Length: 262
Image (tube, rainbow, N blue to C red; front, top):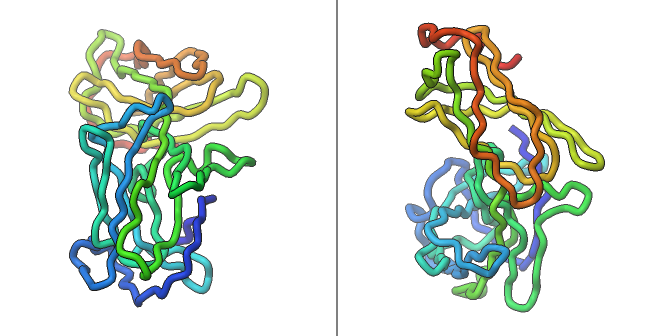
């Protein structure tokens, strides 16, 4: 499957060894000449972001320009926001806030910038500032053993917390649904997106958004539809009291075509 995305590129010439096309953790493919990457994750107030899971994917680009994942590493920042990836194979890698193909509507943070040495890089393409909010790519040379002092800046997205219930107040708990989100910007720009979510034991779910504007959420269940009013989110605001109610008494739980958006 072809996967394309705008990404930050810092190119350091390297000799890239052959790669397997299986998603095998790099920790299981140890070899001489690997590199250690260390740094810190900070928010927009320069506060360290603790216990944040981050990822490195080792990739190769095929002749048809499609990307093939050939390994991955996973790490979590400590209480001071620091991270350390060891045994990174030289070659092209992607630094990611979430695993590949994870819906960005479910990700809490946006990637704003990556500073390496004295140079500051911005992963967002100016013409489409929200298309690369969780990934940056660069190449690691096999002529060094470590790349230290990487500073990663992230921004917490706006949060929409909602509860799904029936008319009598009973929650639709622990159930997979497709959520439809419609957005209208304050000046221009609009979109609609569909994301699969799963309610928790109380019928709740969380959806993260990055843009200032008007939102409306809709979902389906067993042929029923529940939608929110149109509401405004300004930068830094959250909506935590949303209730999506089906106009029906509880009906038996089962997966039917009515639960899925065509």
